Image: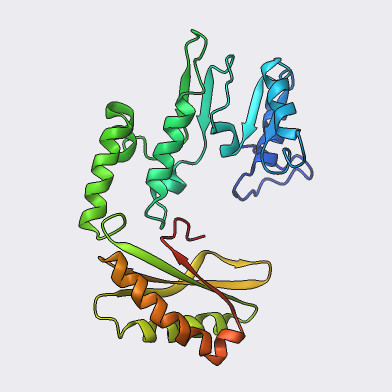
Length: 258
């Protein structure tokens, strides 16, 4: 971290999240002799952009690759020998119960990007918790062992795939309307004795494009029972006056709570 602002020289600095664009700029400052390329949704937007970038990478036009998970999706980089994943703690301590699984999949995928074509490869993980059980299990025992342990944890916590979920999402420019609609939904679902009602609560990204976003989770050990309960409740939800004042949807077997 720099000791002073490069623009004004001020030394009282605050830390904040770093996106791919800021990361690219920082790397270009630290390593001016090495060409850096950014591969994310902004730089590959448009026909043929991704293919062109991948071709240039394999032609050794760039030495440092910065990107999102787009870079992990099965692309062949024979000259990449070092892979870094930043801020893995955001997944280790996420409120999303699937985040550790997604992290383990990402680590497994990216570990295959380094050290191809008979070249030695390394992977570095940025974390404050290198002794975290998930990381140690994944590093020492592999993804299969991690998956078995994760499934056992899910079973004890009554989480998918051992139970089934739907997510009712509500958005509104008025915070109280979005939450009020879901509170009425929660009251409606309490009549189903084999369904658990979790929430409502704010989405991980609470406000987006000027709209307040909230979630309600309905859960049951029986997929069929949950489906029947949802079908019965859906008609009543549509008839609620407040349902016309919010944007809402029902997500079956949700995989993302953002």
